[in-house]
Image 1 (cartoon, rainbow, N blue to C red):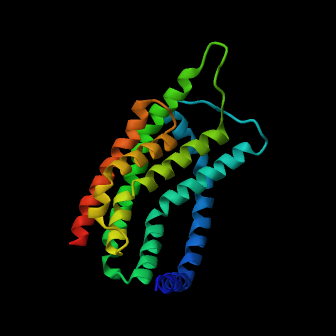
Image 2 (cartoon, helix red, strand yellow; image 1 turned 120 degrees about the vertical axis):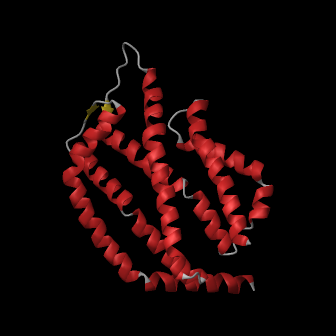
Length: 236
């Protein structure tokens, strides 16, 4: 019975991906076009980032600046297309679990608010404190020279990571609605959730001090509690 259920779910997932093939192709063209657009704007975006974080950059390779601008363009494209990605995810979930497509507006709206809320929190709170702490180890004979490629990787990955992690309540509600998560059972493992959140925050945050760890762990735990509340309402 279990094997048949897994096989049926996999079959539905494959069918859903097949039905969304044209939308994936359209998204690929959109991704390519926006990447070109943002590439020509990437020098101004990089200037804004360096001004915001009070950093001066250097490059140590012939192609490093070009690749840095390309990474900025790709990151900005991903950030811009978040609503489109959420729409595709919702269509996929509807195909697999049989959700009503008309409720997708609230799914996408909640996902957009949570993602951009997490990215904004990272941009204005975590990154400035994290960069300041990491560069506080400089000495008179150790002066930081930050490579533009490493800087872009650092900022881009953290913005995308924080935005994705802040989707936790939406993920919990969707799993509850699909019958894959019992919020009452999950609430009993709150201590385990706190431990996992702290470990995850320690991995994601750029600094090892308790203050910056709390900047990530506390909001994430609050999101977990919000997810539990919304999941219980969904279950009812």
